[in-house]
Amino acid sequence: MQIIRFLPPEGGNPSVGIVCDEGIRTLLHVSSVAKLLRMRSDDIRRACEHSTESSLKLKEVQLLPPVDEMTEVWAAGVTYRRSQEARMTESVSAASVYDRIYGAPRPELFFKSAAWRVVGHLEPISVRADSEINVPEPELAVVINRYQEIVGFTICNDVSSRTIEGENPLYLPQAKMYLGGCAVGPGITPAWTIEDPHRLSIEATVIRNGETVWSGTASTEELHRTVTDLVDWLHRAEAFPHGVVLSTGTCLVPDLPFSIGSGDQVEISIEGLGTLANPVVSGIGPMRWLTESFTDPTQRLSRTNGVLR
Image (tube, rainbow, N blue to C red):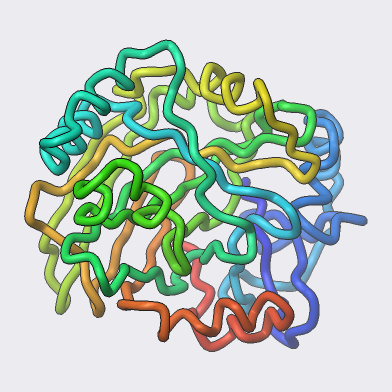
């Protein structure tokens, strides 16, 4: 079972439904993911169990990122040993910053994206044109309702500009928070269907001209902190009336000087959550459609073929 946000074949307003073997089932009286995240966990489960039958098939709809309205995306950093090592390598002058944060009681947490700037499955991600080295960061993301209950899990690609962050850690907002720098999807897998989020395999692949130029595998078993601990820290001085998606950090980072670029495709798979795939573009120009889709969701129709893999 997976909760998805989608545009029907005829266009119109986005809908929220569940992917089942027989197709897509629409959630009754749930017009947005944010509305779902304003509900208690038990009520979300009941809504999923009492979804209505639909004749729609997955291949007929346009998938949208499973975040909307005022829902925010936040991220944790340096939560895996591999991430710590990569940050220390790219930022020699400030390596001790990343070394200290890995073992500190308080985690690194930062705002990643507003819902409208998030791209979904098969929509393009962008790399900054003013950064020489840019990488995908495959991450398990936690979906949390307004009551601080973990209600689901999804995949996040926390696209990062290593050149910019490596120059100075204070440049992190510029390296992490820009148009096309955050992908989430393909949908939300309900928390009650995941036995243990700390035992999920993660795979990432970069494809260039039809060939794999980088790949890696890891497991959330390597996560240095627990999911519940990260959620607790995030809520110590914050409130999220429309829910929040918290990406838990990356365990897969390509070795320097590898970089993704325009024409590449990034594919991230997490056990039980599916695959998030995104073509890569460069700069802000090819992402102008994203600002237009804020008021006109049909702008997304030409961006993907809506296939959930």
